[in-house]
Image (cartoon, rainbow, N blue to C red; front, side, top):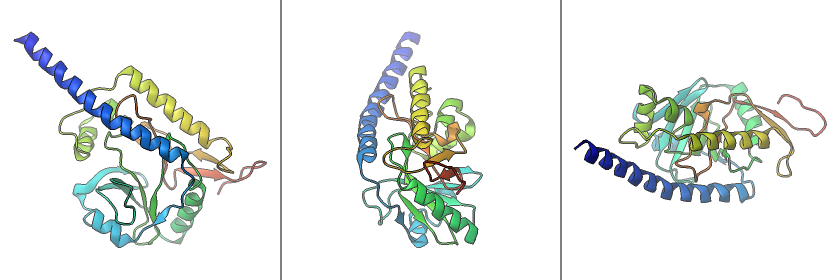
Length: 239
């Protein structure tokens, strides 16, 4: 009976891994397409559209919270028909200074294209609710997948995980570290597609959306007020 139970659990793990592998293949292809595409301007969205997509920023849609804002999930946005599910971060920053900072950093980030960077695809500049929009990663972040705390597992359930996902193997963990390092190297050096250096000031496991399996690249999440930008080949000045 014990052997039969163990075999059943192993079969369930293999089935879950196969399902994640199929999703990861699509995710990897999408990431490569984003990296190869020409930079596109970040879409400016109306606050009313974001409110409608999140049921007025309802607690049931909340999937994360940090020092600078609260993150909500939305199935889709009419203004971004090809984006699919999105994550909407409503910033705590308010007022004219917050808007100026947001403009500065969006200008810097709009040129950044790399398969290991999670792009900002939309923003809301309404002072009643400054927001940033990124693609939603249902695989969760690296911190929640590694530590598997009660709060982390709650966030994963909100992302659609009916049960706690399997622990990450060391091969996946090392790939996450490698991919995050590649993203940081791209940000911290001048490249042909961006004429400035971006210094990420808030690198941590919670900011790394986790790959579904080893086929999908890990990402670094970029958000307003987590960056310091420099815009010269000969000097660096804080934006």
